[in-house]
Image (cartoon, rainbow, N blue to C red; front, side, top):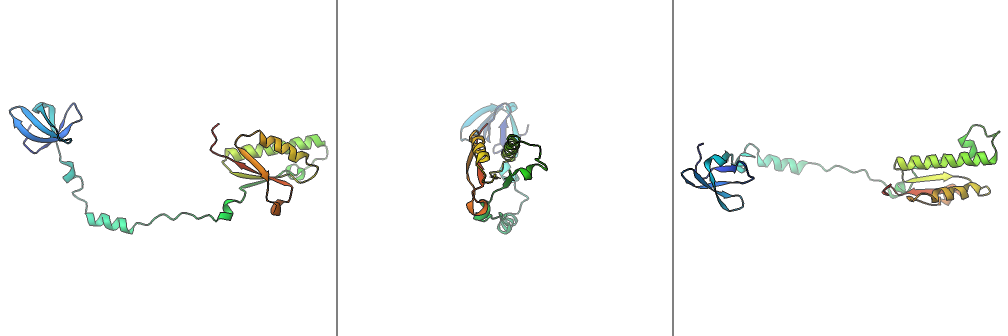
Amino acid sequence: MNLKIGDSVSVLDEAINGVISKIVGNTIIIETDDGFDMEFLSSEVIKTKALSSQLFADIDVNTVINEKETSHKHKSIKVKPKDRTLPAMEVDLHIHQITTSNRHMSNYDMLNLQLDTARHKLEFAIKKRIQKVVFIHGVGEGVLKAELDYLFGRYDNVKYYAADYQKYGLGATEVYIYQNVKD
């Protein structure tokens, strides 16, 4: 191999790079990148290109600077504060909204259908990472609302409270789903 003082070299079986500072016969002394002098046989090193001068030789620095100065930042979509608080999903649990005919259903059957629908929609919202759901249950005697409170209370990642009175009156419950809770 044609090695001379000043050549950049790498040691074959070790992660050592450096520059040849002295050659004595078959022994080569390398000044490593860390500043240490180390001895190796000429058969243990291989000549490498000086990367710093070769790596960016064909790139015009002014071109790169101009590209950086003219690059545009990506515009983020701004969401108004009032739009952030709007419910992502509304579920109307009135029986006539859930089924086409409730003529042959008892009050117990209707309540179970409403609760199954609420459970299904809540699981859907959790799976789809929807943060807020409003369940419209109506005022009535409060049986459905009480059952919904019990249902929502069984979830660790759910907080529920009365929905916006101006929009829904007393007949709705808003559910906030915490998405970062680990299962």
